[in-house]
Structure formats: structure tokens, C-alpha cells
Length: 543
Image 1 (cartoon, rainbow, N blue to C red):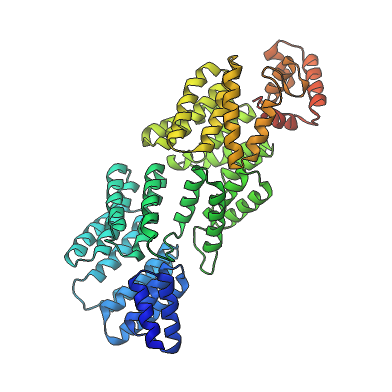
Image 2 (cartoon, rainbow, N blue to C red):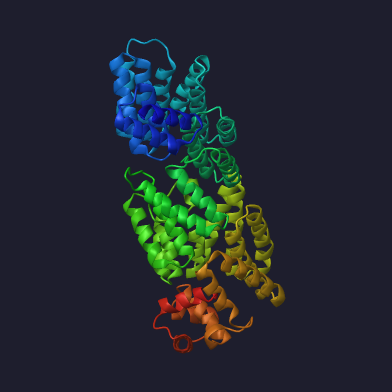
């Protein structure tokens, strides 16, 4: 029976039915220990079907068997396989230990692809450690070795390293050209399935670093087609699970994205814990926040923080949505001050601009929007251009320049549509609707707000629907809570942090009159404090 099991397992392996192959080899191994070649196949099948722990066990056995046979090249290959998997999930110390073992068994051997493999993986460690220039030299040498020994996996991984080094050195176009070339090899079956997933995840990470979402989508679609012919294949691991969730969120597939984010959290938390677990919890928190699941979102952000991923800007936006504007403001001011690298600041600045507008600090919001625009111009990424235009238009609108905001918001809306980002498009529609209302175009305002509502309803964006309800419950020009125009003026200034004396000075009123307006406003709105009044103003689109 074992012989039949082995033949079926080998046939499944040849047909790339990885789950069947893993189960078949494991069943045969339980009856009679597998030989070296079948052990290696069991390890590969286990890895490709998502059983990282089982793969490591099988490769470890294969390494010992090869070492005992006196086959140093094969022993080094298995050491490379174990080390690369460990390194990919963030366990650098044990990975380096296996690379060192691989180097030891190669002592006395001449030039070989296995030695270049060890140098290549150590170059990845060197690159991520902050020395891309030095690592790039090694990658270039390994490409040449791989070509001499017809090792296409080695050539692909070394070119991947070359491309990433260029990206880290600020050479985006030539770096992405190399990554595109490597991905062509993956989708053309020139690279073994084991390394295909590692390459894809690295390429997607490079796209994310450059905010190149269109390229990330195109390669995700290409890899999906490649994966469809391989039952049970688990190509997505580590941070690429999180990147895929972010792409799904942007495309408006929130239900699927939330399920994928939860699956990523479950996968990355055990039995082998990955260093990207915090990012998975953060992405889950983002989706929960957008859907109004605030209790769950807060828990996910807490777990993200515990797992090593700072919860900004998501947690601050949660506080903003809860009306705790002062908390959100403090968090984002501190986070932005701590963050110096431009691409990292880009991930905080949109939330910073929104929050500064909410607290009435238009000057700080303007500074944030200007910085976003400068970075978008430098990186020349369509996604960042859309983000920057949105922020610019929102600041102009908050500053009372609705007519100037409209053309910029139209550009932002068009950019988001080209990126196929329905939620961001709808949020811009709300801003356009408010701007149209401010210039007395009530009909276009209603059209834009109704269009945004349909998108929010389809996505399940409950907080945005509630805010839209507050805006549309009254005819344009009528203030919420029955406030007079003067009381609205006072509320806006109060929400910006001004004292009664400063408000009186700006409006040409006495402090006593301003105090009466403040008291009447609190009574009409049913709020007990200036902080609560500020939250009400934000929630009802008054600031």
C-alpha cells in the first residue's frame, strides 16, 4: 500500500496538487520513512500548501540525510530552504544559523550555485539592514553564477534583490523595471512555485513603498491566474496578505477584505508567529472602523500595537469619529513630529489634515496639505496625487474658499475614479456637494451627496452615512439644532479653540453677548461643554 501511496503522492506533486501531495507523502512516511528525494518533495508540498512548520520538519530531516550521505550540495540546498523560509517570516537569527550551517557543509567545495544562494540570502539581510549598495554587489555576482549553472530560481531571486536595492536607493523606475522582469519569469513558469510567492510578496511590498497601486493590482491579477491551475496553493504569506487586504479595501470589496484580514490575523498568529501580525491586526481595525464597528476596531488597534505595529493614524481617526477630537489631534501632532521619512509621513498626513480641519486649525491643515502635494510631486504616484488633491480641496473648503476648492476637488474625484477607489471617490463627492451648496448650487449639491450616499450604502460605511444624514436632514442654508446664523458663527470659532474674548474681538461683539450665544448654543444642541460642542460641529459638517 505504501508503494501505491508514494506513486499517487509523486503524481500529485508532478501535477502541482500540493495538498494531495503533502497528505500522500505524509501518509507514506507514517508507514515507512521517506527517502531523501521524497522528503524534499514533502517539504516543498507542505510549504506550498501553507504548512510552514511541517515543511521545516521535512527539510530538517532531508538536510540530515544529505549530510550523512556525504552530499554537501544537497545538504546546503536544504539549509538554504529552511533559512529562507525563516527569514521571510522575520526570524532572522535562526535563519542566519541555517545559512551558517549551509556554508559549513560546503567547506572544501568549489564554486557552485549553492554557495551563491547563501551569499544571496545574506545579501537580503544586508539590504534590509541598511546597506543596499553593498548588497547590490553580491546580488549582481549571484546573477552571473546562476546563469552559469542554469539556476533560474537563483537568477530570479538575485535580480529581485537588485531591484529592491535600487528602490531603497531612490531609483524607482529602474528598480521597478527589474521587479517587473522577475514577475514575468514567475507568471511564465520559469521560477519554481516555492520562490514565486516570495517574489510576489516582495514586489507588492516595493509597489506599496512607492504607492504604485496600479502595478500592484496588475501583478496580483496575473499571479491569481497563475495560481488557479495549482490546487491548494498558498502563495500569499507575511506582509503580502496585508497588502492584498489593503488593495481589496481600496477597490470597495470591504466584506471580502475584512474576511481576508481576519484570515491573515489567524494565519500569522500561529502555530508559527510572523513579524507582520501587527500589520494584519491594523488592517482589520481599519475595515472595522470604516464600517462603524468601533469596539472591535479599538481591540484590533490594541492588538496591532501589542504586536509591534503603531496604531496611527487609524486609532486617531477612530477617536475623531467618536467625537474625541482633542485626543485625535494630540495623537496625530505627536505622530507626525516623530516621523521624519517622507513616505511614512504620507501615511499620516491625510488623517492629520482631516483632524486639523475638525479642530479648526486651518493653518496646520494647510501646511499638511502642502507637504502632501510636494511629496506627491516628487514621487509622481497617481495615488498620492489623488490624496494630495483631496486634502488641498478640503482645506480650501474649510477656509471658506468653496469656489476655489471645486476645480481641485473635481481633479481629486477623477483621480480616485481612475484608481477604481469607490469610497475615496464618494468622500470627495461629499466635499464637492458641500462646496456646491456654499456657492448656492443646491441642485448639484444634492446630486453629489446622493451619489455618495449610494456608495456608502453599498459599502456599509455606517459612519459616513450618519454624517451624510446630518447634512441632509435640513435644507441647504438651514443650521442644525435650530441655531441662528450668528450662533453658527460663534460655534465654528469656539470649535477652532478660540476663547470668548477672541470670538468677541473677531466678530465685533461684547464678551457678554458671546457668552449668551454660547449658552444658547449649548442649550439648543443639548451639549454640556465646549468639547462636546466642537464634536457636534464636526459631526454635522459645520467645520
